[in-house]
Amino acid sequence: MFKIRTSKPTSSDKFVKLYKTTATGGLSACIKGSPTDSVCTVLANCVGYSCSRFNEIYAELTGNTAMKYPYLNCNAENFVERAKQTYGLSTGSTPKPGAIMVWQKGATLSGNDGAGHVAIVEKVIDANTVYTSESGYGGSAFWNSTRSKGTGNWGINSPYKFRCFIYNPAVTDAMIAEENKKAENENPYVEPSVVMNQATYKNKSFSGVKWAQWYLTKYKYYTDKIDGYFGPLTFNAVKAFQAGHNDQSGKALEVDGSIGPLTRWSLVNESKCKRSTPTQAKETKTMKVGSVVKITGNKYYGGQTIPAWVKKKNWIVYDISGDRVVINKSQDGSSGIMSPIKKSDLQVV
Image (cartoon, rainbow, N blue to C red; front, side, top):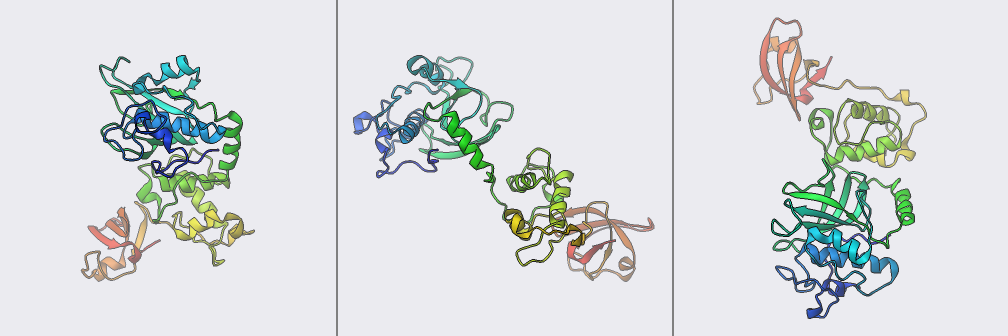
């Protein structure tokens, strides 16, 4: 469609004149930014940037090198009226690539209680998530942001209020449909670099978990929403996937419900490592709070020697934090302690 912008234009960029004011040899009718960028003189300013980037996308897709919409140069919160009345542009509540996002600040559109904010949608990740490029008067000349719809305000708190998207006429529905078709095979989330498991990642949404949920959805192991929470449905889906796949060496994945480097490789390369007989995988018991364990090591987490009488008993897990596991009472109920032990020195029974 169009090339996603992840940095501000350089002096050699084809459309850099769109980011320069007319007073500095450019095509933009916007004011100078503050602080004024040495190359893109409309920066730093959300208005100057969004006007220029909107026109750049139009120019890239149509070949029109002129400033097609030069007068999107009012207060940010008034872009909607300017776009409709001056240019007949369409607006709506559905995110689309190349659109301008508009927020008003305060209760009025007069500018007396704030000028608002505008940003450009570079990519639509899903109906509730977009990747943007932005600038801010008196602040940074350029940044990218991943914004979530949330309650409808798209990642900006009160007194800002989201108004709508202003659609770029150069981005057609046919282009969007073609882009969506391509995206069906492209994971929009970032691959995690750490081992992710249910015990650590169940109470908060994580991008790495979304990354795994996307693949598990694609392969029909996971049917719930992609929310980033490592709940029981995700845990069971990971285990089901592991039970039917090998790692890159051809060895069966361990069925433990954790997303480590071997499982991540298999998720990416699913067609290369799928086994015809999933029952080959021998499932291991997963340690969790409430599990009954026996002690296989000789030292507590802090290094003290574990007494023989403690090792003889089975214990109940009270808490797990990484490799640190706290046991608090014996399985038979006759003894109680509150002792941390390395996870690797315990075995689920």
